[in-house]
Every structure is written in C-alpha cells, then in structure tokens.
Image 1 (cartoon, rainbow, N blue to C red):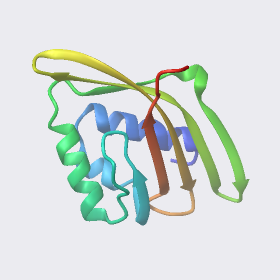
Image 2 (image 1 turned 120 degrees about the vertical axis):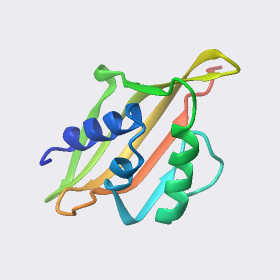
Image 3 (image 1 turned 180 degrees about the horizontal axis):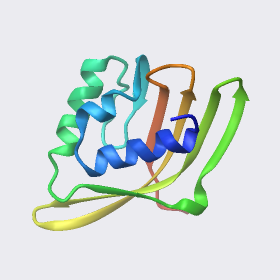
Length: 127
C-alpha cells in the first residue's frame, strides 16, 4: 500500500469484515486512537484491540465512506493527513442505526504500521 487512500480502504474493509488483526496491523505501536464510541484516548495496542473487539461484536456492523468528503494533505515525505466523513451502522435492540462521524488519520507511509493518529467523532446536531 503506497497511497494514503489505500490505507483508508484497507481500514474500511477490515471494519466491514470484523478483521481485528487486519485493523491492528495498520496502527503503529505508539498510535493514538480517539474513537467514535468511547470517551477515552486509546494509546496502547491493548486498549485499541479492546475497543475494536467490542465494536466488531456489534450486530450488523458496517461502515461506508462519503467519497466526496475525502481530503488528503501531504506534510512531508511519506507523511499524510487524511480526513472526511464516514457512516457507521449497527443494530441496537434489533434496530439498525446510523452514526455519521468525521475522521482524521495521520499516516506515515514509511512505517509498516502507518496509522500514527486516528480521531473519529460523531457529527453533532447543528444549531
């Protein structure tokens, strides 16, 4: 994977396939995850694993990228910021719910595990 969009594509695929090992293979050992469905900063591989284990246990879990929102910025050789909006879906009490979220990834493509920072938060209601 040589492009930032490839990393995002693999991440989305891993979520949609509940592939925890695949997800973890993308996060650098020192990565920070500010997750969509938690009020904690996750900054160890163990905490990131626990989060994705809980999340992928959700019934009917899926995520879809809003392609038109995707922005990629280059900050140096092999350093990128990728941001946009995606939509989480999963069932709660047999009802399929959707959660729009904005995201940003800091990527270092020179690393085997390129995600160094990932922030995702639900989009709040507007005023």
